[in-house]
Image (spheres, rainbow, N blue to C red):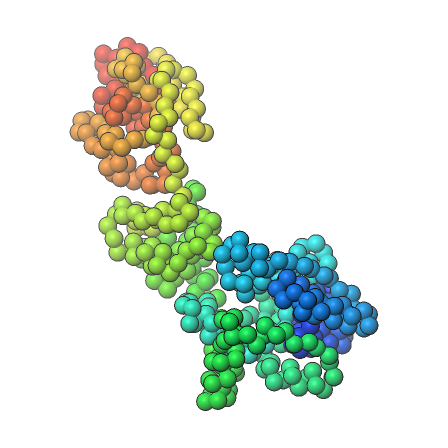
Length: 430
């Protein structure tokens, strides 16, 4: 038990994840016999995954019997990993792992324990690094298995499988074998049984070497992650990242923004690379990502956001009063003659110049706007000139007649309806 774990868990209750295999039984024995000196109470936690039928049930019965004979409280969970794998269309290994960790967090959340200990060791760490490497990963995937992650602790992570085996023999600890550990149909088992032994024939110290590598990468990963957290900042409902952010930091910042926008698993490296590439593109360049997320180059920033849906077919007739459309409001109220100073500060129009056919709506394809002082532009170009963020454009209310935009609520009044010396009826927009 390292110093960090003993300090963090002093006087608390830990649940040891026990499958009945040699590693987890060794950890349970270790925790019961050595954690008491730190006033740490030990309970066992067993998850029956519903994978191996009667064999799995026998393993669970073995764990329960051992705990009963040794006076160890046990937390029991039963899940259906095959069903989850089929429903979510993911590998059985992944489904079992997800459900297993859900049980761990449930035990902590419901006050059954303060932390969960798992029996991962340096051989598992090597296996994890190779698995991530061959599958395709960045630096984070090469940092291996952490000795502490949230409420999950791994006291054996720096021990080899051989050292744990010696511990089991020395203390005559009973255990059961999971026959699926010897089935090469499972990806990690293939690495464990076919690849890693060959590596260790040539590099006997492979586990220790990879462990040192992961420790170094963890430090660098934490440093780059801290820079990335500072590089991405919230802007309204979206996130912005400066285009001059170094690429190593930029990629991490993009991932942070994507996760904050709800895209936690379905993004791929190509998505991150495409967003990073926007720093070299022209202003206004936009790319589309999963989950309705868009990323755009906006001057010296890259903005990531979920664009509001464009309600093209929704409109209401233009009249005075307070109007609401899909959660957005605009107030149109008559007012008396105003001073030139007030006219410059607010949004006023000549009521008589607004056609009876005008409506209140959101933007549509083909919209155009006549600027104050003359000159007509597409509404999109006008928004670009005014540096209106892409993520906000679909949510701006307009008063329009056909494709002629007369009022952009809160932003501008068209030259075609401006107040002049002949205006008799003025309306104010808020």
